[in-house]
Picture (cartoon, rainbow, N blue to C red):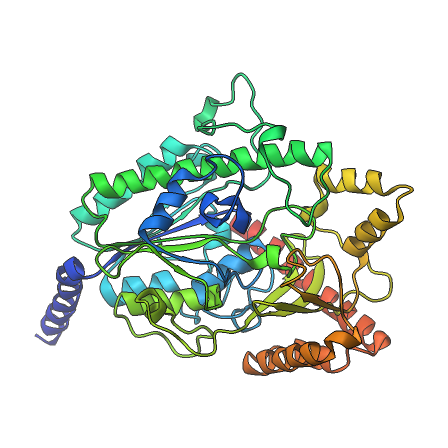
Length: 496
């Protein structure tokens, strides 16, 4: 009899969650892969008709002009979104998963309100635990190598219908593989295997070169392929919006769009510059709040996204989250303490550790690079393309260009920029006496951020002027990253 009552109570709880889904919002979280903030037309892109679907989404939702990802590289960035924690508190410093005990967004939605949870694309990089609870899962191979617009549409529609059949609200993390490298390059048989060409293909004379890059022919060629890939990501967004309308769920679906980090070019992805972390960010929920608004006031970070979505779903956030909800901002209200964001970079997919920390306000950017000592050279995928090679070639015999190339490779321990005058962070003002007051304020904010988040880099920052100490400390960080890399490989081999 006791067993009967336990089963009955469990059924009541489960059914209650399902019945309540009519008042519970669906959530469609769309991520682009390596998209620059200014690639959207609505954010100021001069490339003609580059993102018509995203521009429409922005017109109907709330657009933020000062939103930042916390880490400017794939899995660590997505790990912050999934856990609501900074990398040092989730363990996702690089391309790793978090502990089983750490609460995650999809789990909280599923356990509290019976959400049907699904993922399309970037599965390993967007799944925060070794064993996870996805009800629907399709990776790149099922999506035309992550470039199949129609396949994304078909699978999303199938998932929505599955959730409706089960009378459950849904959470879908839909991850475009665009505009990640390799960028679009047309061939006669390109669409074999499910890939789709972008609805518009750009040429070198139709694009713009960001201010942090050199305007060189090879750079333009690579950027034309990049912008064509951006357009295909926009095509996928349009397909998702069509499905929501066709299935009659658009009104009560929270649609979120963001990029996991900046473009895969020098001085952007895998760094902590403005163009590294500033993300196009749009939220639309017709039933929940009025659209057509732009927030140009508050700085928000993607560590805040998990608590925000949980509040929207009326789910109590777990303890020990680093982020805090910005849901009131979606309602048009104001929040205090939104003047700064704190951003990280730790290591790349090959476990090369280039530890960076940054504090950013609207006007200033302050960076700590403990790795930039002892002649160590920076090497990540952001400088693997033809653009950086072209910049290196152009630098031969040109002192100014040579300094820019060398700075990309070697850096300095401290960087400080006046973004109001230098939005692309080209002129390092660290130590400039004219900015002593402003730099001191940012130094104090760096310490506050490190203390508040229990960041172990605080000890290194306190000894930022001791080069010998930083060399030994960063060598230790690299050894630890190498050990984790071996552990990750062993785990992967055991699975196979």
